[in-house]
Image 1 (cartoon, rainbow, N blue to C red):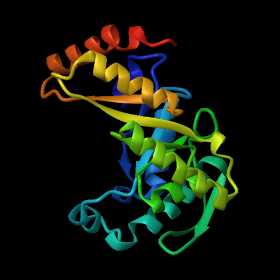
Image 2 (cartoon, rainbow, N blue to C red):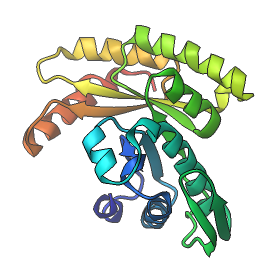
Image 3 (cartoon, helix red, strand yellow):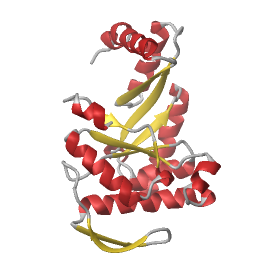
Amino acid sequence: LALVAGVTERVALGTTVLVLPHRHPLLAAKMLATLDHLAPGRVILGAGVGWMREEIEALGAPYDRRGAWSDEAIRVMRACWRDERAAHAGEFFRFDALACRPAPARGTIPIWIGGHTPRALRRVAELGDGWHAAFPTAAALKEGIEHLRTACAKAGRDPKTLTISARLGLPGKKPSAEILAEVKALRDLGVEHIILEPAARDLASMTAAIERFASDVRARLEL
């Protein structure tokens, strides 16, 4: 992402997703804030709790408590971005006041939280700036949004303050008309951003898939 930041000026840069238990939140906060200066105001943190037990346990986080670990990690990162000197005393992290520099270029970094479980949607409502849905059908997304609204009501959160994004696969042989219909259905449900994942194994195939999407799908959307 740092390399891409240096050769671009407008494109948003994000993770889809950063597995939170893979890094201490103080380190992650500083890395992301630094990146936000290389790409001023263009960084988005897509965040998730992960699923691979071996990796998470090898890196020192408790697999069965990874959700609570991640909730606390988000709070630590936000404190680091917000406060000149941040201190924290929680279940998983404890540190005295320390300087948190650099601060993000825009003061904070939006966090789009992935996952579809009730716990994940509760995390979105309580701690996120957006929900990042992975490969949803329109029906699954509609159901997820309904659950998210329920979670927001419990958290006292206006769901309209949340950004909804979707990670969309691009099968190489799928007709463009079908992809266009999928994108329109997601947009009509409130999706504001789509992150494309071509089914490609090399750069040339990936570039071709993106170019086909641009000409056959995006060009036909009423933007």
